[in-house]
Length: 150
Image 1 (cartoon, one colour):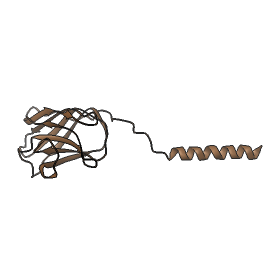
Image 2: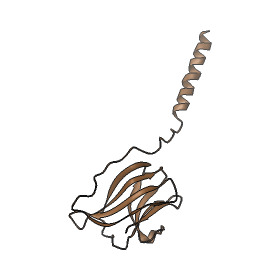
Image 3: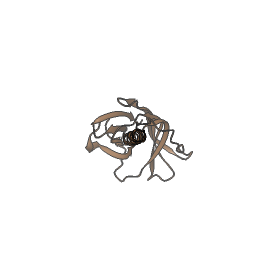
Image 4: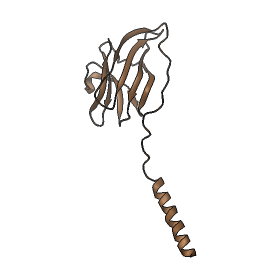
């Protein structure tokens, strides 16, 4: 009887150990990420609503200047997107991805639900030619969506 009990206990512990090594399920989009809205002194460079192609992308973007004209901010708001691998936000000269026409802003590492997130755009490479915001998965060459800054 002791052997059966010991064997049962050993099998249970082994099962729990194996189960804990399994890849955890993706919990889905993250909670809202808050960031401050543009200040009253800000100057809008352009804004627009996203056109979606993949991963439930939706929301809007605004590119604006703060007090210091050298510093611009890109804000994504009411932003929704399920997570994807190797997803980046770019400013682009066109509505499609081409490495020659983009300025990388950030890499997104999670999904988002009704989020507002703000990024600094202080690169010396920025110019008014960047009229689009792209959300693009480099690994799979997949455009999640874009918005035109008007």
